[in-house]
Image (cartoon, rainbow, N blue to C red):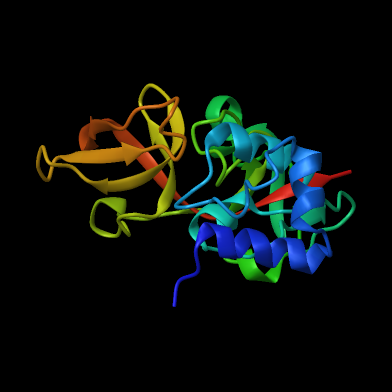
Amino acid sequence: MQTTVKERLIQYLKYKRISQRQFQVEIGLSSSYVTNISRSIQPDKIDRISNRFTDLNTGWLLTGDGEMLKNNIEIVVNSIKGVPYFNVDFICGFDIVENNQSSIPDGYINFPQYDKADYWVNATGNSMEPLISHGDIIAIKKVEEWDSHLLYGEVYAIVTDGYRTIKKVRKSAKGEEWLRIIPVNVSEYDEQDIPKSIVINMFQVLGTVKKIF
């Protein structure tokens, strides 16, 4: 049975051996905040929680998907084992890697869970908060013949002829020649339909981690 947001938050607090009272004081919430959670947690409260409890996977907290704790990894520079990591932003620098096969990786990430990825690159922006945060690094795998191999509802890194973006992808009500791209942070960003004709490449986002140096 799917657990609720409140149940998952209590599970995390028990794991950390933090009382509800202590949690509420540290975040600056009312003394009955946890008890009164009904459906979800407001974005401003999520920001407070993620800033204070940096190991908590807020995507898991809100949806139940993934693991309770974030994966913190160290990028190994002097190694050739694992998936290549390029210290570029997917949004504004990925073309350096994608269009230059002689690019030298900044390091390699040996993370067996995502060993099918083609690259690790940086994520920027806030449209996918809290699932993907600004400064995270993402494991991406190129989808060949993406037009017939998309898993609708999954997160993709999309390359068009004018921009690059990371969004959930669904079918569009406009028809088969369109895609609906959806942010997680719907309080600040809107869903939109884009024509398939402008999409050059599609990369499935296999996972996301925090980087430490």
